[in-house]
Amino acid sequence: MIQFFQNHWGSPESNPVYTDALTHSVASSGPLPQWYLAVSADNRVVGGCGLIPNDFISRMDLMPWLCALFVERDFRQQGVSRQLIDRVAVDAQRLGFADLYLGTDLLGFYEQQAFHYIGDGYQPWGAKLRIYERHLS
Image (tube, rainbow, N blue to C red):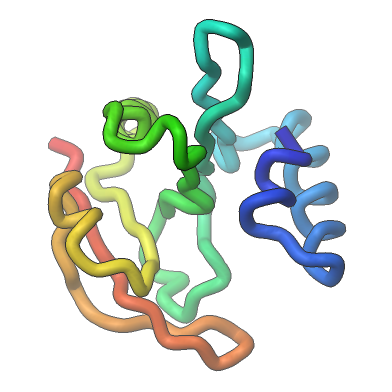
């Protein structure tokens, strides 16, 4: 799992963050974070994402956040993203959350997954991201 997220979202500088975060999430005393993998019939990891308290974004008043969604190119357009997002949404609602958030610069995709744009947020390194919300009820 660590290698999957490092391969798709990491860099030499940020790989220790993924190692540390994912290693410690297994023994977390609270409900978050949670990490998800989609596995093919031949046991290859083909997608993944996380459900976390905050995604390094200025809007710390919002939670939880869908993060690090990635699906391998050969498995896109097959519903893998939708299955991952829907599973995260079900789990977030089960944990008592009314909404699910994400930050992205991608336009058009998340709107198709029942998210709507609510404003912009900022990451510590200065990047501006669009914030989306999905109502869970």
